[in-house]
Amino acid sequence: MSFSCVTSIVVVVVEVVVVVVVVVVVVVVVVVVVVVVVVVGVVVVEVVEVVVAAAAAVVVEVVVVVVVVVVVVVVVVVVVVEVVVVVVVVVVVVVVVVVVEVVVIVAVVVVVVVVVVVVVVVVEVVVVVVVVVVVIVIVVVVVAVV
Image (tube, rainbow, N blue to C red; front, top):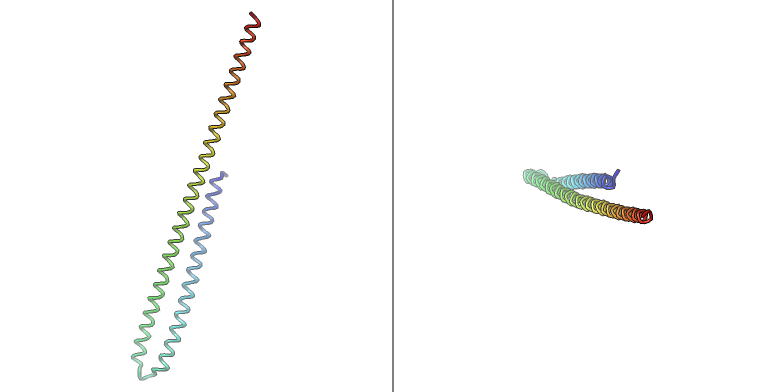
């Protein structure tokens, strides 16, 4: 496996772990908020029913409806906020990962290009040295024979 392939696999695993952790946190927060809101709603309803009693049954029903509407609005707002947070976190993670991948790819390409250029220059120098040595040997042999 190449370095960039391993890097990409590690980055994808990190992305998946981050998304799973964020989703679990969102679910836990939503469940806790719903449980707290329901318990508070039940306590408020019981207190209102005991204090107001039967004479104010209509008022109690109106208060219960208002509490339920408020609870629904609060839950919706909490869910919307959590979704926005998840989207922002995922977008930031993806952008960071893409930037890291691009930097790694550019670095690998630069290293490969530098290595290829160095190898080509070394090969050219060796060829020139060999040609010069062969020419010198030929000249020495020709001079020696003549």
